[in-house]
Every structure is written in C-alpha cells, then in structure tokens.
Length: 202
Image (cartoon, rainbow, N blue to C red):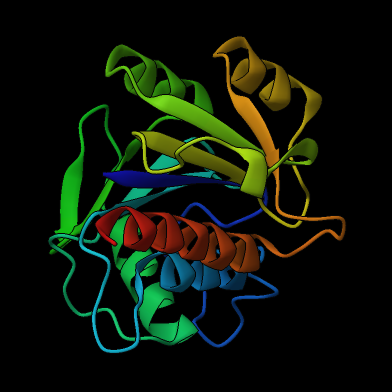
C-alpha cells in the first residue's frame, strides 16, 4: 500500500462550503481535490493500492482526517468538483474518534498529523517527507518499500509539524531544484515508483 498524507492548514472543516468556490471560501479545497486526483487516477483506471489522507486544520472545527481508499472508492471522476463533492459529503458527517464511511472508499474521523504518524509508526511504515533540501529522489533506494509520503499544502509545513515528522525518522527527499505544487509532486512520485516497478519486472 502507498499512502499520501496532505497537511491542509486552511481547508474548511465543515461540509457547508460551496463547490463553486473551492479556491476561496473553502480555504483552497481545490488543492486537495487535485492531490486526490493526482494520487489515484490513471488514464483509464484507478490506482487501487493507494490511499490519500487529508489532514484538515482549517476553521471552524479543525482536526479532521478524510481518507480516500483507492481499492474501494466509488463515484470519483477526474475533475475537482467530483472530489470536492465527496469531501463535502464526508464533512457533513459527525466526526468522532473512529472512522465512519461517508461514501464507498471515503472515510472521516477526528484527528491530526500526530494521529497518523503514531498509527503508521506502530504499523512499521517508512516515512518520506517532501522537502526542497532533501535527497534527490533518483538517489533514494527503493521507494516501493512500504512508504508513507508527507506533503504540505500551499502554505507548506509549520516548524512544529516538521519537528513531529523528523522525530519519526522521516527521510527527506526532493523532486528537483524548483518548488512544485503538491499535486505535481504526487504525479512525479507515482511516476518514479511506476518506473522502479517496471524495471524490476523486466
């Protein structure tokens, strides 16, 4: 399983946002929608071995996690509005400690970055943090090995969040010399892993 964790500092944490104004009133929910699509979509299929975890820290009720499961997802089309609609439905549910399903393959609960880091650590997962000063991705050994990729939104990652990530022994990797949008980073990561897998098969 491949997991992407997106830290969203401004994305609205209730389901009352308008699908017509996701870049504005919804706190850049459009960025998260693009990350979902970049993580899951192939040309004529979905990546069934990928999960996306949206850590929503915006107002008015911060501290929620929305999870998209590629193996079970339904009703997701390759446009921002479709992903936004599924997030909206998830946030209309009452968040609790345990996950609840809003639609097939989409789940919501209360929690933050520390929640996910703790759970992944207990599962023995490998953390990879996308950072401009990290090791070049093309010099990194086997990205297919049980990895959890952690990315920030348009605001980046706070010092406190970065400390939490680094305390888990995360490996910092870079995708190149120029900063990129989070959804573009995800596409490049998936492509690097695809190429690695294809090389092993050959």
